[in-house]
Image (cartoon, rainbow, N blue to C red; front, side):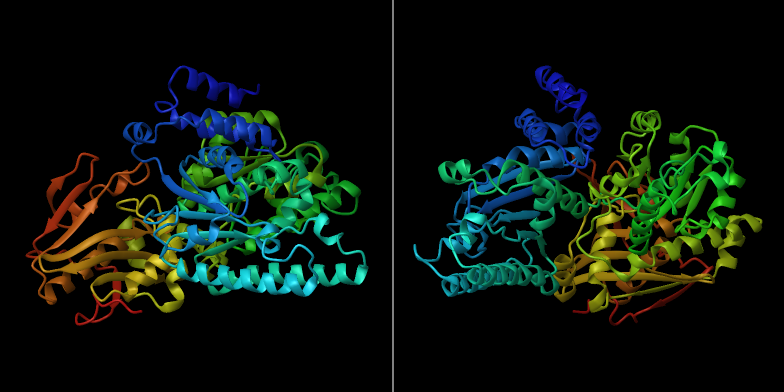
Amino acid sequence: MSRGLALLRELRDAQRLEADFPLIAPALAEELDTPDPHPAALQRAGRLLAGLDHAAVLALHPGTPRLTVVVTGQSTVAELTAPLTAELARHGLLCDLRQGDHGAWARDLDPADAAGAFHGVRAGLTLCLLDAETVFAQVPAVWDVPDVARAAEAVLGRLTALARARAGHGTLVLNTLPLPRHHTHRLVDHRSRAALGALWREVNARLLRLTAELPHLVVLDLDPLLAEGGPAADPRLAAYAGARLGAGLLAAYAREAGHLARALTGRTRKCLVLDLDNTLWDGILAEDGPEGIAAAGTLRGEAFGAFQRTVAHLSAQGVLLAVSSKNDREAVLDALRNHPDLVLREADFAHVAAGWGPKDAALEEIADRLGIGTDALVFADDTPAERAQVRHRLPHTAVVPLDDEPALHVTRLLADGWFDTPGLTGEDRARAAHYRRERERGELRESTGSHEEFLRELGVRVHLGPPEPHEHGRLAQLTQRTNQFNLTGLRLTPDDTRSRAADPGALLLAARTADRFGANGLVGAVLGRRAADGWHLDNVWLSCRVLARGIETATLAAVLQDARAQGAPAVYARYRPTPKNRRAGDFYPSLGFARHAVEEDGTVHYRHDLTEIPAVPGHIALDRTGPATIGRSAA
């Protein structure tokens, strides 16, 4: 038994799974951080965690995220329980998993059906496993392609209606339907097989296209998983147990679902940190010199070039890049600027940490320079000793295990979907440019005499108002990814923000900022509601990349001013401590809020009587919707 599973068994046998829950994620990360973890390892890990007492974990570790996941489907879904539990635990998540009835997916998904297994359950993630029988159960014993077409049309109509009805009920996950050979080859003529194949591909294409219409829907494409993982099912289990998706495919599905759960709970990684020697290029710079390294022109070099192109593709979608290399800094910068083989250049990296110190210290330096936690980093390196050191010293940093086979670098980098997100926003695509401008701000900070002088020179502008219709995806993403200045740990989906925006009693404001170096985009938000006794603030968020510039003070000062202007008797707020937001614990008191009450879980309630309202900091130019409408959310 490997070390990760051995530790889990040891903790279970000692009845310490709950007390030592923070050790589980790093243990499983080491166990499962491979491009294709063995299904048996996932099953064993999931079974070892089956008796985990969630209430005890939350009592001992209050900041632990918990996700309610409901699973239904056409066939037996019980075999998904263990791998899904293991995958979520690997990302530090407690999985409250509930299963529906065999074949009752239509009833289970219908929020209006009181007989459904999940009626009244508030699920963060709903998984509906579909297979070929979803369609073929509706055709006669002897069928032809038109029969399948009619059944498929009915199934697609039902799925579409149910998916629409589940708006506001968390994220729904469907999947494309594998077409088994035992269906295609019942047709003895090739023309009919081709017609069935074309029909089936169109069914799957229509499922995939539904995601463009429904933001709360995710459709997992099983074709790539099957291409790498083998057969869809074991015919014996399909026949005798109704398990028409096999263990290998369910393990791969659980991994994809784990990536999605990680994104929904704000645990998407932000920065890919790359080693250089035998990771980004072939060769060792310090030994071979710049003329001895390659990323093109040789068989191995071309593989490194393909890896660089993949990394560049990730960067274009908002993934920050950084370097951690044991080399002389000037030699590294010269290679990044001038080597003819390289796709990636110095300007592509938000920070280059090159020197002879330990890699864990370099990663801490990178995180500090970028204003993010080490748990937002993904570290890719080909040296086992370096990876082991980072795992030991920075257990929440994700590690991508590379080796001496560069042809597998791309597969290993993409295996764990560390940067997966339900949707990309314009802010995502501009992130690298934002951080390049942040370097310029850093240079200004170093050239000014004090922080106050720096702020005056920066010329911060804040626009505060209701979100525009196209901003709900970015607004939800901000709530999911913001940890340091997230005053209650609350996270929202695009459906949540749209419903709040449509509620006339709600307060939903977006803060957009810019300065002399350019726009930062939508970086903050305020969520609340208006009541007879005053305005109640449910949460405030601010992106870590604009902290310490007075933006949070300006935003709340504007809210307090407008609450008073609209006749509110008071403004109420609350702060719930999480492992990441401790630095924001004094925010409300610093603005004149008085402590009102404290709950058992540490949540502090505050009240502002609106007699003395803080001023907007003098270095900030605030542009806001007028007092008559600032609390009115735009649909």
